[in-house]
Length: 255
Length: 246
Image (cartoon, rainbow over the protein chains, first blue to last red):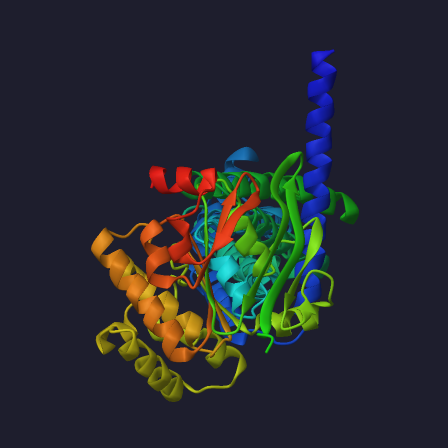
C-alpha cells in the first residue's frame, strides 16, 4: 500500500510542477508583449548569455569537431577520405553536437547564474521590493531573460557550429593529412540547410528550457542560502536532463 | 471632524492550508498617524504586511487603500492604489546589481523618465536628509554597513513621495545604538514628510519612539490596541506577558 501511496505522491507532484512550469512559461511569454519593455535589462542579459558564453561554447565545439574528425578516421579503420570525414563532422555538428553542447554549456554557465540570482532576490525580498516599486517581476526579470535566451542560444549554436566544423578541418588537414581544398569543397557540397534548421530549432527549444527552468526554480526558491543552492542545483539538473530528452524528440520529428 | 482613513482593513483572514495565520483582523490607519504592529515571532505580522503590500491575497476580508479595495479590484487600480505606499523591508532588500543612487531612484529612472543627472541629484538630496555621505551614491549595497543599508532602503521608500510608509522590522539585525538611530530617523522622516506609517516590529523600544497607536497581534488575532502610554498600564494579560518577555 505504501509503495502505491509513494508513486501517487510522486506522480501528483510531477504533474503539478509540470503544470506550474507551463503556466510560468506562458505568463513570461505573455508579459513580453506588454509595455514597458525593459531594454536595458534585456540587453544586459543578451550580452551576458551571447557574448560571455562564446569562449566556453567555442572551446567545447572546437575540440568536439577535432575529436569527431579523429574518431571518424580511426573508427573507419583509418579510412582516409575527405568526403566521408567532412560529411560526418558536418552533419554531427550541425544536427546534434553543436546545439547539445552549446545548450549544456549555456545551461551550466547561464542557467545556474539565472537560478542563483533570482533565488537570491527571492529570499532577500528583492522580488517583493520590485513589486512595491511598481515593477512586475515576471516582466522585468523573467520575460527579458526568456527573450535573451531565445535569441542568444541559436546565435551561440550558429557560431559554435562554425567553430566545430573548423576544428574538424584543422585535424583533417594537419593531423590526418587530408587535402584542405577537397575537404572544404566536400564540406560545402554536403551542407544541407535542413540540418542547420534542425540544429537551430533545437537551440531555440534549449534556450526556452534553460531560461524557464532556471527562472522557475529561482523564482520559487525559499529558505535562505540553502534554498538558493537547492534551486540552482535542481534547475541545472532539470534543464540538462530536458535538453538531452528533448533533442531526441526533435530529431525524431525530422526523420 | 472625522479623520480621513488612508488604510482600512476589515475582517481579514489568511490561512496556509489548515494553518490559520490571521483571523478576522480589523484596523485602520489615519492620515499622519504612525501605527506600530507588534507581536512575537509567528504571530502573523509579516503576513499582514504582505497583504497590505498586495503581495498576498487574503482568504477573506478587504484592504482599502484610499478607498480602493486592493483585494478585489482590477490590476491597474490595485497598482495605482499601491503607488501611494513606500516600503522598507526587514533586510533592506536593496538591488545588489544596482548602485545606491540607482536603487533610490529605481522607479523614477525607469518609469518617470528621469535622466541620470537629475535622478542622481534627487538621490543626493534624499540621502543628505538621512544623514548619509554623498560618496556612497556610486557604491553597491554590499559595500555598506547594515545601518547604512537600512537608511538607503528608507531613502528608496520615500523617493516617490508616498502617502504611507511601511517599515518591516526596521531595527532587526542592528545593535541597540544603531537601532535607536534608525528609529529616530524614521520618526523624524515621518514627521517631516507628514506621512502615515505602519511599522511591524517585535522591538519594544520602537513603540516609544515611533507609535502614535499600537496594535498587539497574538494567536492570529488583534489582542490589544491602544496608545503607547496605555500599554504599560494595561490589565490585558497578553500585553503584560508581552512586556515581561521583552
